Length: 239
Ligand code: AMP
Image (cartoon, rainbow, N blue to C red):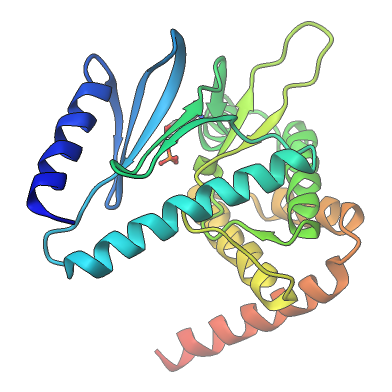
């Protein structure tokens, strides 16, 4: 990108973000709460890394942005909950997404349930919900790439309605039909889940059961998950 273009792009980003509130500073992107055409929205800005080759950096940023949008659209088309994409600016690498209001991350939800002494059984319906959503996502050949309980939002229940689960942060996602890729996706979640939420082995098992019963392609994925676990164990034994 020419220097002049880069200056213009920086100015455009600053305009967008005027009055926006920074909610997360990540290694690759900043996330803001802002507005789009008068509506509350989430703005995700992927920024450049000075230490990377500028051409490579630009390519990587564009690829991640495109992957994120592609997977969100694919999920939404299949009836899965993911934020609406309002606008994408390829010059500034900013994505404007629907703000999922009245929600908490699944991480916060489980942590506060555990802190208040709720039983594991009281979280079974949440585990069922997560398993079902992930099974459907994998049947659409969307591999999330960074499944954690922080990347799932739970909309607070309204009267008589079950709170819906919304998947977010598809920056590392890709499209793949390979059971191995889906197995690794579930392995990443298992690792993150069990290390973030202590004593939740039965809860995670419940999630996997729900995944298996909701996904047509699950037997091959679970087989791969077992293999990946074994590989992980061997690696940690070797050190
Ligand atoms: P991310 O880097 O995409 O995981 O976003 C960081 C944090 O911003 C999340 O943990 C959520 O708390 C919040 N967040 C991201 N996207 C949304 C959204 N569409 N609606 C509401 N909150 C969001």
